[in-house]
Amino acid sequence: MQTTFAESKPGAEWWRSAVIYQIYPRSFADGNGDGIGDIPGITSRLDSLAELGIDAIWCSPLTKSPQKDAGYDVSDYRDIEPLFGTLQDFDELVAKAGERGIRIIMDLVPNHSSEEHVWFKEALAAKPGSAARNRYMFRDGKGENGELAPNNWESVFGGPAWTRITEADGTLGQWYLHIFDKSQPDFNWENPEVMEEFDSVLRFWLDRGAAGFRIDVAHGLVKEDGLPDVVLNDSTMGGQQGPDDKPKDRVSPHPFWGREGVHEINRRWRKVLDEYEGRAMCAEAWVMPLSRMATWVRPDEYHQTFNFAFLDTPWDKQKLQAVIDESIEEFSNVGAPPTWVLSNHDVIRHATRLSYDQVPKQGDGIGPDYEQPDEAKGLRRGRAASALMLGLPGGAYVYQGEELGLPEHTTLDGSVRQDPTYFRTNGERVGRDGCRVPIPWTASEPAFGFSKTGESWLPQPESFKNYARAAQEGVVGSTLELYKSLLQVRKQYALGNGSLQWQNDLVPAGAFAYQNGQVLVVVNFTNEPFALPAGELLVTTQLGLAAEGHLEADQVAWIRA
Ligand code: NOJ
Ligand code: CA
Image (cartoon, rainbow, N blue to C red; front, side):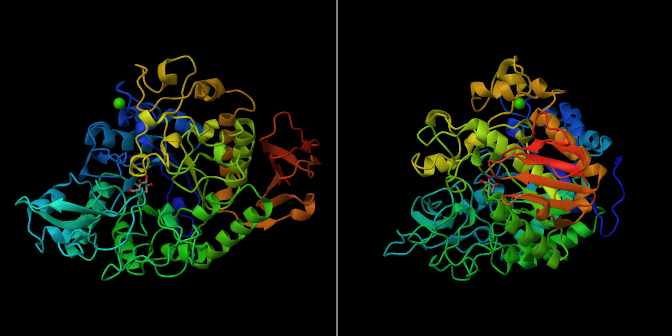
């Protein structure tokens, strides 16, 4: 493969400092006008991502899937979903991205397959106790006639985590485990055949030029022997909570989140990646506290893990300072770079989330009945949080649309919702569709330029026209231009490979300032403007701010000090 990638040097490997852009394929760009984003759409927009200044793209699952959970239900791990294109389209994406120095990271979903995976079909047709059943988590039910689920586990999307099947002979039979939707049966990760299959899937995509993987539910693969009831819960993935709905003892063993046995799988995969040059994998592991999360990125395990502790932190000086310190300390203790992330396809977009003092639990989303956000405040804080984040040392993740300041769609009607959470909770939790709405490219075109026909699998709110990319291009002070400047300065001063020193004595109490190399990042969390510390103003969120000016509430300045 021809690429323009810089050599990876030990200790300075690309992933330690990379800015990785998450594409949610259904909603990025629709090449054929059917209302669903696709790979040719992504390829056609690569120049805009190169201009943004990112290093790699992580695509949410592109693999074959009936799309019951938007691709996180895979029916063939070695093929591309026809809605998104073909393997050739994928190869072309890797090649064209490579020409621009951009790597492509796949999303791998090893905890569960789709119910339409050939293995699950075989399991349904086979007998209890058979090898085919043993690739998944089938159990007999409790009760006189097996009519009760094997244990009390709940699905992350609501309702029981078990579904009873009808056996091939027509009788009611065993139950299978699905930590997510019933269309997503959990694999049995005690079975060597499952392990070997995934080694081979990893190699399949690495051979095709993938730069690595974002691994879905990386903390959920191993279940406790005997599958005991959940007694004491942690808060991971919005799953089962304690009786008072508060996260419980977060380090206590949970029967399926963050089991010790997962580390063995991490190491197995790391060996596979190490057979190739310059590849990396990032864990989606909702395990707290950070000291525990850091065990996922020990030198022989993952390269990165998403820093959900940072994402979960409100717009609060003390709390942000504390989580930044803790992240840097815990990750560096194991020799891994910290990562930073504010938005993704599972959480309320940060340009909306940060306008609230109290936000719904992760995954619950915001619907029309919820208190509606203060859009201006959200945008102001969203931009400030991004400028705060992108100055930090380590890797950073940017979710498509956040570079436009895009808000959550908070008034989607139930009739158009698609997240299984909405259906499994009878609409009580509206779910994640609000952060997955197709993004706007041009204000005046159908579907704001997302698809030429105007089709869009989720409706876009009218307000999206104000955020269209073309309308921000070259406009001083626009969020798009802000991101471009942040990424450019970040690269120029090698901030991703830098280190952080607090400089709070340079700013009033209620603000904070940190130095990374030659750059001083100043953040005002108060309502009182204050005079900027001396130095050359490199980039700022505040329109019209000059070097000797005053930094206003919820604004950030990067100064060469
Ligand atoms: C985490 C993914 O990010 C989410 O979108 C998905 O629904 C679950 N894992 C299940 O695969
Ligand atoms: Ca399409």
